[in-house]
Length: 527
Image (tube, rainbow, N blue to C red; front, side):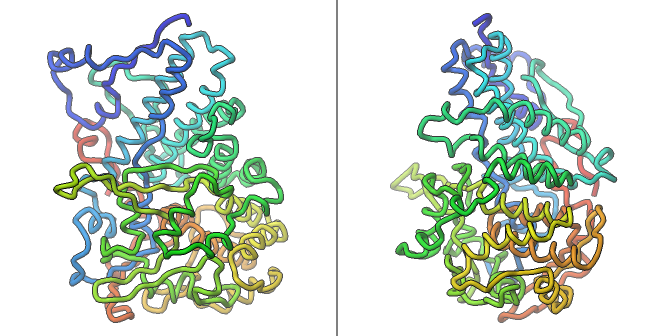
């Protein structure tokens, strides 16, 4: 190795978050926080820290239309959830806060950059190509999360002028750097550049027995499919989805029948759902998060819930395309709970795990495991891309895989005629008279009624498949779906907050940057 790379734990994300410290203080601590990336083994091990332990699930899910307000009399909330639910600038901190998400992703980016720099200084040996590929894809993913949470969604019309986030491609070398936000379009261009360079270098053999905890080949292709779907490059989205799950993904779908036969309810099933032995889980991430509490059978965070009202009118229990609306109509059934100050409708997605730090005091840390890329979500990414290309038969074929695998009885083949009958038979959603059909206001053109109805069909299935994972928020942003908050009283709409409706391209769709970042000089999101 030509030269040892030095990691100085003065990560740039800390400089983004904190005011400048004095040179004296900085120099006092630097010598004790130095590690040498002077072997291939050390460089590879550094990649562990390129995966953030903070996830977007809770803030994204609470921001979305999957949640209702169960009233001020429900004490099971906190200030951070209140701020997120009403799309306010978040002042609170915690594992699931925007502050933690920002610092966690930039910490992962810093690790990727240190690895890439060490490989460069080593002369870019071929033996480290798989590590280089993983570092590039992980760097792209962390930036992808940040731009989707802290910026408007990419559009061809506004992408070049909408504020994105700083895209970091090298280790920080200065004490008090000033960062400029790239545009959303620039961020996506750099994400694609990293993906297209890194993906061919990935070699699953480098991961040993733990490929699901890394950007393995399938997960990296699934990520690329999502990126190109979000940037409206439908052909590439399909190509990468094919590479991730195969043209015929039947053998890689989740074994819902196996899961449904296991003993237990939502909490126990969640542990199996996110297992590394499940073929459909292309990548899983352990995280420090309260997501398992919020989306588990716990009296925690229940004021804002995917409750039985939304379930019966918009999601699993609504007027579905296949007519099914009970828990037993689904192979892997949903669970609904109604009691005083407790109303949750749940599917097994996120287990709750508690790390005890003080057994006497009974305190510790909340953890979960999150399936960040799955066969099913990638399948629906491809189906949506087919719809945009007008290839409806292929889109229906993909949704058919999901339907046959998810429903207890086969409803038969779907055609554009049956999809039109379902969608045309629904009134458009209003807050007081909800349906699964919401007005779509994307920046791209929807050609005709059949394309719109096919999009309603695919987006409805996506909403079910991605429940509790935060991805619905990105679909809301992509399609300009408006949200009006409602208070549910005794199973009905008690009131609506019409004056606070989240409109298409509302500035609040871009979550505000952490206050410490703004204080350090970063341009904040408009309000």
